[in-house]
Length: 560
Image 1 (cartoon, rainbow, N blue to C red):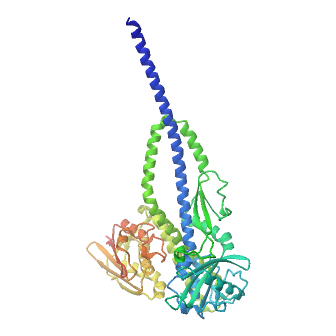
Image 2 (spheres, one colour):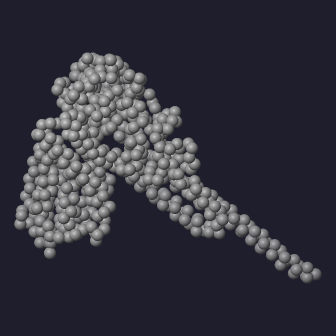
């Protein structure tokens, strides 16, 4: 009676084992399939994140550049009401704005009541206005002209489109068949803003901006700031028409889009009420990765045939997700710093290039015949080329000076001579800004062990910062002393100072203090200074007080 029971039990156990194996295979197959799907999804998310960061960076950089004239020129403290009357001292500010920003076709200004006959136009000398007015020669590179029929239209629309706070006016209109955007700042004689004392504004040819400005900006940001790399960048208008780049709608793979408001006025300066004649045009910045589709397909085919590596793939996925979570916390601040760096470095590089070209064109064309003026223009070209060389040296040096064994050639160098040579390179800028310079570096100060080029770059950046961030008092002091094994330089300025919570961040690449925004600079100067000091086994100490100035103490080992 027991025989059948002994035969049935092994069969039952084998059945349960087979069922368990089948269930385990099915479970592993399901996990392998899910791992393959999740891996492909993660790869797509990484591509989308990469394109999304590039799209955000491009949209922010364009927006900052488009709002630059309104925020930093029209609301600059460098001009006042008296400069709006003949002989139009405002031309100096306008010439600088033409150099820094390509999109203003003309500026216009008036003093007193807003009447058409009071409005005067300031055009680019090398890019005539399309208003149809006959320009008359003025101070290079600005020509002064008038256009009564245009002035009448502007006077009417400026009054109708004044913002809620009464300081700005922005609108779009058609001038001689061409669409324009016009932004203006108004000055008043009374605190109730009832009597207009004058105003300054600029016009933007929207056709020219569409055909020239945006393509040039995208290409410059790709080439100078490295936005996009091998990614495809494009801009389309509110109707979906392509402005620049490849069409993102015809492309396969993930596409990241960001909105770009077509306004050359700073929304923060327009208040809460949008002007009636300023349409809300939202363009789109699109970024895609042309190589993503084929890469994703190949990745999916490999993953679907290799589910036996599920455990490794799962671990890699977990690690990737952990790294993504960690990177997300730091990328927000880095993206903001890179965006500021892009806009600033683009302007910093374009300014000396445009100035050198304009000055050279002026001399070559024969408009400057007086020998004294030729020497003055030549000196200006030399100074602009020095500024350009300094920017390029800083941009290249940060990556280059990391390898001490290949870059530095150490020798005994006199700090007295090094400081004197550095100040000579800034003699023109110091004189132009009326700086009071005090140098107390004895010739008997012991020589230090340093690389000559690196030490010169270090001093150049410190002196450039002292000039760039100077306050109302223009003063610079450089004092040297020595201890048993070190020679020290104390560089003290009377500048705007640095907030206490920002001092620990000085020396990080791309970092720029809040008080220095709008004063230029690439954000690499102090990073290079700190790296040079570290490579020379020296010490660097920075102390600063807002409104009083900054003191930099540099200590280097004595030679021998």
